[in-house]
Amino acid sequence: MAKKGVRVIFFGRVQGVWFRANTQRKASGAGLCGYVRNREDGSVEALFEGEEAAVRRVLDEISSGAGMGAALVERRQVEWVEPAGEHEGFVIARED
Image 1 (cartoon, rainbow, N blue to C red):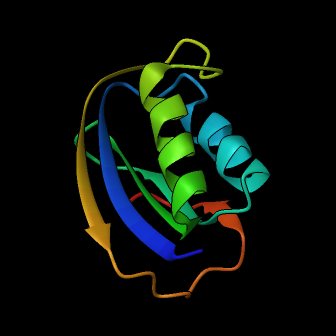
Image 2 (cartoon, rainbow, N blue to C red):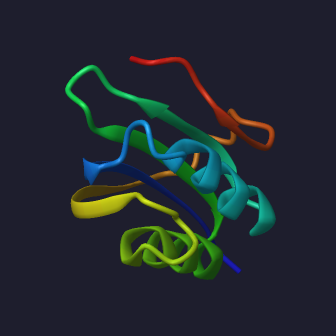
């Protein structure tokens, strides 16, 4: 299967509601690599790399709110990128 990468910025109620921890749990459980981090503007940025089906599934689950607690994604900015393979596992990174 093809490896894919996607950089996403999530907007809405995504800081202070365990969004990063839940994103890490979902991405790690799906075998994805990358990171999730808060941004100064109140949004959250994530990079997901792995099998395309897993990337799409996790992205859809997060966006729909499934298992995301009090988080509410109002919109997202998605950019498909070539996977760089720079990350081992999926981590919560420091703010940009």
